[in-house]
Length: 91
View 1: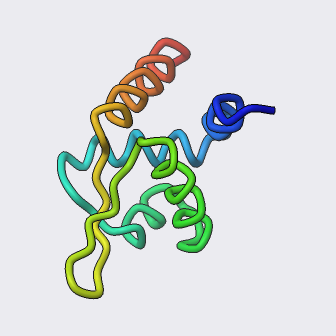
View 2: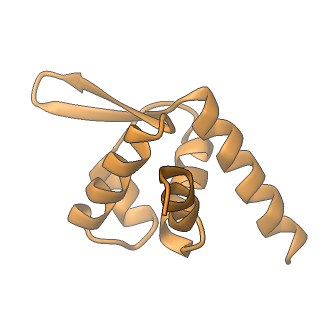
């Protein structure tokens, strides 16, 4: 399986897809811990998924002292927008 299939498989699962949508709806930077609460996931799972998303250019970790703030890249925002559109079509 190539890397593109691996990253696509991430979005076949609800929680990772909703992480991107929540980051998009946040309209700025947020913390992994607050994202974990919003999507009802453990912090460690959120960080693991976000690290994979970072490898594929979807999110950025912006370190400020000991804290890491999250933001979407342009590519991540585009993917989140499409996920949200698909979710709305299926309602």
